[in-house]
Image (cartoon, rainbow, N blue to C red; front, side, top):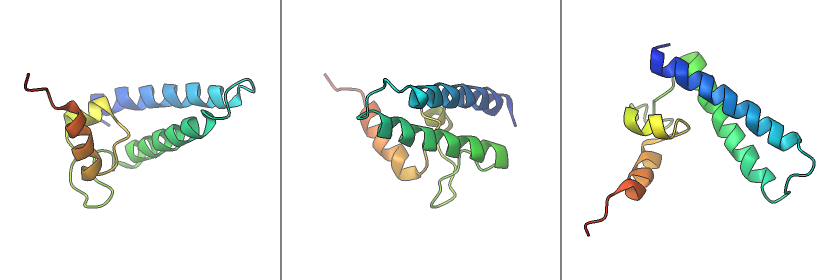
Length: 94
C-alpha cells in the first residue's frame, strides 16, 4: 500500500470502530441505525478493497476513480457515483 492508502486505511478503521460503538449504544435513535449500518457496510467494503488491492477502481467498469474525489469520499464505488458527486461540487456562476 502506498502512503495515501495506508493513511486512508487507518482512518477507515477508526471510522468503523466509531460506527460500531454507535450501533452498540442502546440509547441511539432507531431511525439513525439503518444509516449507520449502511455507512458501516460502505466502510467495510472500502477496507476490503484496500486490503486486496482493488481500491480506487469502478466496481462496474474497472476504470480508475479520480484520486481527488477518493480523498474526499473514500467509499465511492462507481464512475457514476463520481459524476453525481461532481454535480454537487460545482461552483456557482454568481
